[in-house]
Image (cartoon, rainbow, N blue to C red; front, side, top):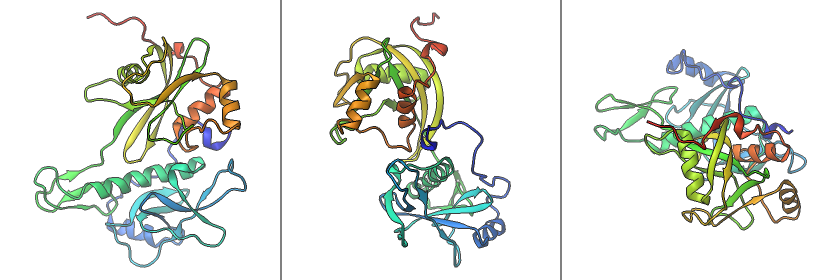
Length: 311
């Protein structure tokens, strides 16, 4: 199992410096630290990386040392990682010798780099999308360390928003997996089933509803696996493995196509170029890899959803 397909569970790898995150002196010292790094992210979320020898290798981020005076409205603190302060900014990345520019969505990153990217992009996207106060519509400014904005008119604090979504490896009684393709995706690109949690809705209810809406299948059992932030721009993916019954139908037309696949079918189609699996950085890919390797737990070891609760 590669580092890119390991579950997203464990102790956090980033020290987010909560004790003194908004202390300007502490942040100035972090910026001036000889080991401090700045990750420049382009307009389309591209960065400089050190590529691996093959497409299956993990790549390494290629940040630059911090320099000059910090602009705390543009150069945002991510946190301290393995003793080194990390910052992020929206700026055109430049590739040095041996480096290349690549989209963050497509990269095969190790666990530490993944957390840096998730946290940094979430801060960056939020900082760019909340320039106005939701109460008085005054201008807001980032605090020294973020991720908080303060209105310059009324003083209200504004915090980042996270949109919860469910994502599931849905399997049938033959242990085949349901994979679907959105209309905007390239031919052959597929993923597991997913959708946003609505207001006032439990995650498990969202799972049942989304699977039914997209495929017509009825979920009978589900087990929670793990979560993953997906900062494009601000989702938190709640991962499940689920058992479903029925026949896949057109559903609500959110998917261009969906069907059940056996392990042999997935392996053969991927090898032949007929299927393109989710990006290595996603929990969707971890689910597919886990299913292919028979590592996913049984959905029946979680919650039985076949019998509705009575009032």
